[in-house]
Amino acid sequence: MKISIIIPAHNEEERISRTLRTYHQFFNALKQNATILDFNLIVVLNGCTDNTSQVVKEIQNQLDTIHLIDCPQPGKGLAIKIGFEQALTYATDWIGFVDADMATSPEEFYKLISDHDGYDGVIASRYMPGAQVYPPRPWIKRWGSKLFYESLIHLLFGLNYYDFQCGAKVFKYQVIQTITPFLTIKQWAFDVELLYLCKKNGFKIKEFPTVWYDQAGSKLRLGAGFYMLGALIKLRLYYSPLRFMFKE
Image (tube, rainbow, N blue to C red; front, side, top):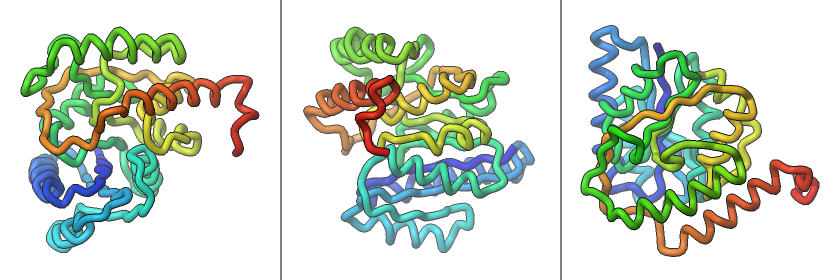
């Protein structure tokens, strides 16, 4: 199989080098052992104001599997869509994305593909039975999300997953080819729209328990929940008879 992995990066000069080198080393070993045919790592800079670009360029000069796209506009959803569009130009079988902080190790990311069981896509989960999160999160944080956020997504979109926002997901080429033109969310609720489009198009998505290492320097800020709530409601209106309210 051939694999394309998108890594959105917003001001990641301190962490991106370790992530790229570790992922390259792991997947290159699989390639040398003929476990996979080929792979590439697509770094999409989104609204960086630090030295992330130069750090990636230096690694790019050493590793031919690294591809760099500079998107001046911030937004993780936008960065991933741009990465999807680039990956679709390659002869690849699987297209996925992973966070730049390496909260998901390359070993755990590869499990998503090797355990796909005929599904069209596999998403990592920090909360389903069998998953492990280090250090453990406060129970109140988890149950708050479960009772409010996940219940709202089920109500609005009919989606049932333990974890919508885990930053490690992978899909077959056909899935990304089908849904990418219709992705609209540039930031909040990107994952929900992606999974909803998979559902609308009849793709089978599997959720898989992962091992997750929370990293210092999270980009998520206090008040993000309010933005997420607004994004979910706007997204539901967009996929409704009231869609005419939105400019194409």
